[in-house]
Image (tube, rainbow, N blue to C red; front, side, top):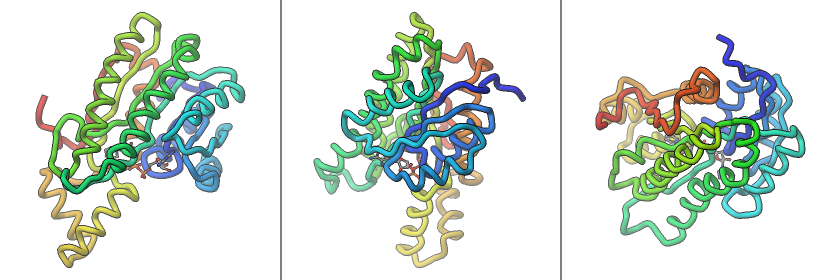
Length: 257
Ligand code: NAD
C-alpha cells in the first residue's frame, strides 16, 4: 500500500532501539528521509545502516534545552523541512509511590514530557509550513492508573492531554496531532522486567511472560513493528481526518472508554 510518504522528512526521538528503531525502519521502508535522536551515536549509526533512505543521526540527551531545539534546527538545516515529528523517547522509573524520589519524578518528566513539549514547540512553525503532523508515543498507563506506575502514568496522562491541546491548535493551522498508546511491547525494557520477575519468582523468562500476559488478560505481548505500522498510518494522508486521536495498540488490554 502506498502511504504517500516518499521523500518526506521525519524526526524520531528515542530511535536507537526498541519502538523508536522499529518506527525508523518502517518509515524508511515507506521512503521517508529521517533524523534520528538518542544519546548514543554508535547505536543511531547502527539503525541508520539498517535503513534504505537518507538518515542523519543526532546524538543528544533530550532531557534538557537546548538539545530539543538543536535537534529541530539540525533537521531543517539538513533537509529544509519537517513533515513528521515522532515524540517517542521516554524512560520512567516504576516503583512504589513512597519509595520514588524527587529526582525520579524530575527525570521522568524531564525526558518524556518536556522533550515532547520542547520538540513540538520548536517544530511547530515548520510543521505549519509543511502541513505536517506529530505522533506522540505515549502508553496505556496514561488512561489506567496502577500503583507501581505512578510516574509513567502521570507523564503519559499529561502527554495525552497535550496531544488534545496541540490537535485543537493544529485544526486552525493545518497540523495533525495524534497519539498512540502502546500496551506491553517486547523491547529491552520489557525483557528486563521479565528477567526481574523471573528472578523474583524463581522461574524462566518464558514462564514469566506467560504469567504476566495471563495477569493482564491479553493473549500475547506486542511487537515494536506493530506500533511502527500504526505510526506510518497516522503519519500518512490516509489518516487525514484523524486529529487528536488516541489509538490504543495494546492487544485489547484497555477495556475502559
Ligand atoms: P527503550 O528503553 O527500548 O528505548 C527508549 C529510547 O529513548 C532509546 O532510543 C533511548 O536511547 C532513548 N533515550 C533514553 N533516554 C534518553 C535521553 N535522555 N535523551 C535522548 N534519548 C533517550 O524504550 P521502548 O520500550 O522502545 O519505549 C519507547 C517509548 O514507548 C517510550 O516513550 C515508552 O514509555 C513508550 N512505551 C513503551 C512500552 C513498552 O512496552 N515497551 C509501553 C508503553 C509505552
